[in-house]
Figure 1 (cartoon, one colour):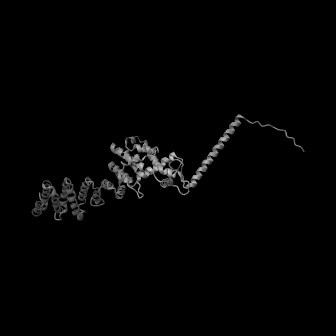
Figure 2 (cartoon, rainbow, N blue to C red; figure 1 turned 120 degrees about the vertical axis):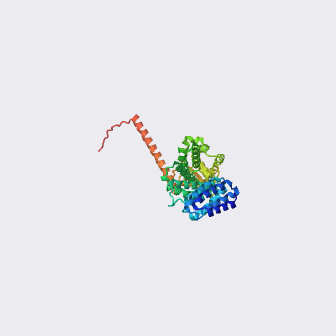
Figure 3 (cartoon, rainbow, N blue to C red; figure 1 turned 90 degrees about the vertical axis):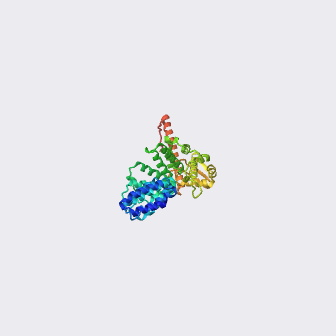
Length: 424
């Protein structure tokens, strides 16, 4: 069916049919267009009938059911370009009358979003969805339906690596999620939260979110193991320190961890073993693009995490080490190695001190207190050494007293009386 025939049929319907009889004829014409139109004319024919369906002379009462059938027919079309072109034409026509056709506009946008998603055009899908009227008094929208649309927008933005826009809609979901009883929506919300935390490099929080998902009974086994893998990746990329050590211990003790590919690097990091470049390279192949993105100083998150881990591992092996030797161990210059050590000591993630004159780093053992230190760190170190010295002196004195008591018990000393003459 060519456009001229469709236009002629539409004019005939408008001129020779009373309003109550127009709807059946429009429906028959729509069916004929879908059945007989060629792929190159289908979009134009559908746009022609849509112009008449939304004509002011037809009236809202008659237009609304016809438009609903049109949307259903358009959704069944197998040509993606036709769906997008006609759908956009429908949105443009509905814009001046959006108050009367909010539900139909929402259905068209959802259909277009599904088409964009099938083409992996995530940004276009998010943009078409975010203009759906959800805060309106013209129709009742359930909270779960709002959450479903917002989460769909979030997921599309995340696929486009636009975490800023995704976070905006995540905050909207947070205002209603406490009312939600739908377990699937709750799970999707947790997944989106974890992915945003991951993308924003809040790896320890993301790790906990992924780990919680891996225990969810409504998730299939394959997805639970994938969530566990993501949790391990985030734990590995997290800054070295006491909090990460506790998280690594939790993951290492999980019996399921041995089943994932990341277990080998998890085991080495948990046991404070130094990582070789080959192991790091092999692990990097399983990371996402945002994990390998370079920061302002030209290094990646993975590179920093490995350097800090190896530095922490070196503190387990050595009591002290020169900055140049540490640089060789970490694959850095002496100044860069000293900078990493100073930063970790300052942030409370490494226990030790630096002698910049002799260029030696002294390790006290352990991961540090987890609290930031200040310029008074030297005083704290001196005070700690003095307390240790006092404790040793006290222990020695107690040992001497204990030996003296034992000698007195075995070899008691008898007192002798002496007569003393006093001369006047």
